[in-house]
Image (cartoon, rainbow, N blue to C red; front, top):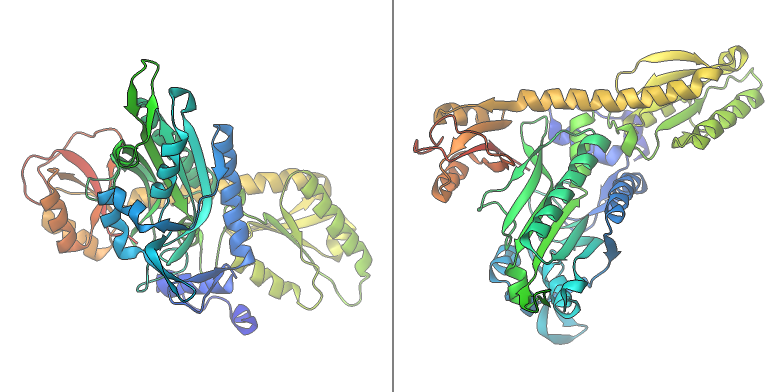
Length: 483
């Protein structure tokens, strides 16, 4: 690993995105491969980015009266079977526990692929009256889904970290509000914190979460022309309530089935951040989500007194820390400044501060931006304000650049041959009309590998017939190949 870090990234992002991505994940020490195929080790630096995502979303949820809880990892098979459509959708991906030691279990236990069933069984015991509603619970956990082939760190693994929310409401209107509020939380996290622009909308009936009344989604576009799902929020209707007998006595003294929702986002968010913002030097982490926003590197010369530089590094770090900026002073003596520059560029720290003998003498520091390599010298008095300004500029410019790329990835067509050619040539989102037929949707997927990624939240007026069959277009949709 030490040698690979010295070499750095050895392929160009534009030439081989897959190999570039793998090198960034491993050489930036975000993650490593586990002994079991399909699993990965989340290293401390990668986990620190996940913690920043978690801290932001956890705060937003608690501000709206959601509470964290934990449910068992193992789920009885009979629970999964209670909601038949849900069971059919997840069975191919489930890991099963069949023995306790040498003893065979009387009932197979599923290793949590998602928690709807075990949570709704508990809700059936907790909900009695309209006074018990709403129940607003969120989980931070891992889930397991059998992904043995075509695995890739953060994108597709057999185990992944995520949050999954599960709520119970008295009415459909309340459940609808919950779904849209969470979708907006996700948008704010992804766009405003991670600088990743997205398209919002509904999934088609075929692509929605199994067992849901409807699913809303956020879809981002990657540099290779493939979409990636950033999060989903589902109105489960009364499907799970009826399967698990979640009933409440209403104000009208009548018994009603409750309405439930679920929603989730995973560490796949990190994969999109890597691919979208990174460059040939490695990772670029947007400042608002960066566990280290500023790294300070002292530049010593053997003939110089190092004490003054060391003192200035410490005082600069203290000033930034007191202002709420996440700073790391890299005072390791076993590495040269140039080696440190390369390492922290690989790790994507947004801003670097260099402090050498001349900086001490002239009461200044040198700032270097990770996103564009611009260097400028600032006086000590202006250091804090300049650092804050630079971090905001980096955040804004990363999003602006990514938004431009997203807009450029969207094409529109009513011609099926052009539709297929676009997907083969460069991919991206294709805005096209669809008749609403599952048969056409399936045929397009079989022909091209593209699926309906999203149907806009607000209906857009169809501009042509169905892209596949030519019949009247019922919906404007966005198609793409995806991860």
